[in-house]
Amino acid sequence: MPAIKLNVIKPSVNNMTVRVFVRAAGLDFDEHDVYGQTRSADYLARCPAHLTPMIEADDLPKGALWESCAIMQYLCNRHGLAQFYPADPARRAMIDSAMFYLVGTFYPYLARATYPALGFPQYPGEVGHSDADAATKEQARQAAVEALAEPLEVFRAFYLDGKPFIGGDKPSIADIRLASTLEFLAAIDYALPAWAETHKAAMATSLGKAYAEPAADVRGYIGYVKSQRT
Ligand SMILES: N[C@@H](CCC(=O)N[C@@H](CS)C(=O)NCC(=O)O)C(=O)O
Image 1: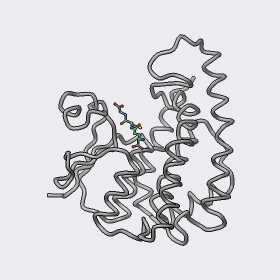
Image 2: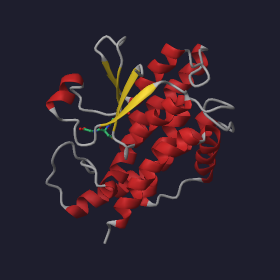
Image 3: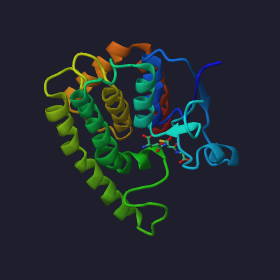
């Protein structure tokens, strides 16, 4: 029986991140599609945050672990995967910084900019419910679209700094997190800078099917929501 149970929602780039990683790392995992089930009593008992990706493994103190970057860090530590997550503290810190910057600063803009087009709950400035009218929401969404460029440029100038990958010559877990995340920008036909297209292509070439299979699920979903637009 596989050692890792991976719970996923396939259209999601947070999930794509871990789905790409476990494939690229050649780990023994069993994938469970929990679309529509994350708020069931059974799932909440295991994961009160009702989030995916979420892994379950016997050696975890609480049996479950969520947050895509924490999952990749844990699996790299557990399986000694220094090719994705360098052991050297300074190099490792750069990978951590890139991932925290993505999740903490870049992703909130990206979610605000793309989630309405993706048909996901929450829209600009909203936590649960807002009485803002459609024009105000769209204004806030546009502001988020415009805000994407600055942190994106930080990835190019600081984290990549002329290297093919944040990890250097080979993709790191931060590269997997970045490339997967940028897939959602196709939902709003955001013109990615050339370096980001180059990075995505290098990821696809370097990781092959490990990247292509989960990416196809995200791209398929984006194609579907676009086809539903009037
Ligand atoms: N920061 C988290 C975000 C996870 C997240 O937002 N997951 C969403 C899918 S994109 C989810 O599982 N939502 C289901 C729910 O809230 O019930 C990560 O990187 O893993």
